[in-house]
Image 1 (cartoon, rainbow, N blue to C red):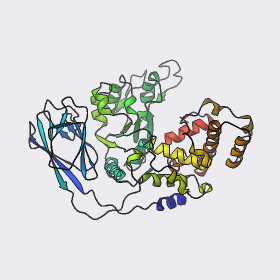
Image 2 (image 1 turned 45 degrees about the vertical axis):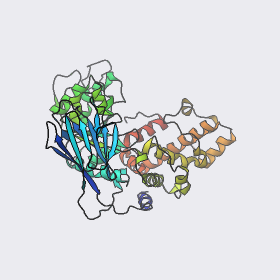
Image 3 (image 1 turned 180 degrees about the vertical axis):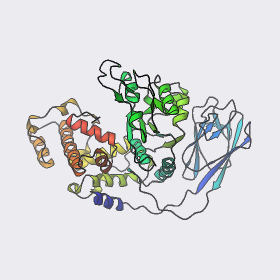
Image 4 (image 1 turned 30 degrees about the vertical axis):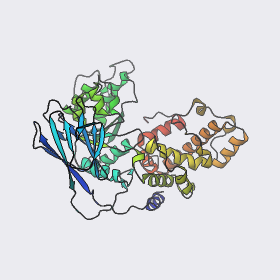
Length: 460
């Protein structure tokens, strides 16, 4: 399977890419901070009065996170982050604008001059195709890789932002695997997976008898991740009542179990991820700014798939190859069929579409399969009671029994997922981490597939 994946990656050319052609210098030419400068070379940087910003201003009329600045091709993208007093480019109030240099930006009492500065010439470098288990060779992903490598080499907290399905968990795992902590555990804590009443126990652990149902002592995720990395997924959904306790645990490097009196030391590197705009969550009072400052020492924005030109083919070929030799050659009509598709579900939607195409062929051209199958999928059809059948036989039986199209498609997809997961797990001797990596999906999503196909507890 590994050789098949390599062949798929070779099928998509990855020509050398020149270093970024431009950078922009932002200089304060009037206001309390006159003389301060900031050079923008790629990923988004922030301007405001908050200490988390890249250009920190003392102007009381400037919001804490006032502007976001990033390079897009050869232009500077300027985004007003819902500031109180607004942003003006060449005296015109803007919410978002692309600048080419020589413009002025006014925020509060501060005047910023935008100057185009050609980047230093350099030898062309080979374009990376992946970073750990994250695939993509678009310009935006090159910038993500470059920054992620720097983050991995350090031990600072980092927050990964992006839409659902962009691969935040995989990037976090890739950072862990490229870090000095690679030999330590990589523990995932999902802030959406548990009700609030159980969240504190899962985070910090509990002592036996501390509450009804606590039949034994349990370590929290900080203790479990000692010496390694703790990945807190969907941090923006964490109940605000638990946020100060999480902040204290991160700052002090120690936790107290529910019902306990002692403190448990832990040496943990924190990575977090969110689909939410934390700047807006802080402004709205739904997320503590002190916790935000602690988690967002570094920030990585994962672009949506629709903005990653050329990556759809690379990912589709890689996903197809991961299905194994029995999948046959990659169908060129797949790319023609989905050319121009916006991929609202991002990389996860593309993976599901490739799997559906392999399992159902032309049957997969209808409406999307639901991420969560309906109740009907948990009840075996009488004609399927004998267990999984080869894909061709299954489709023939579904057609023969006149199973409604929508249900037939879902049953066929579920049968494929069951056989695929079983096969790839066997290939890696039951090692879920390696099986998920070879499948091109995050470990947590692989556990979700396991839970869906045989009803097992996801935590196993």
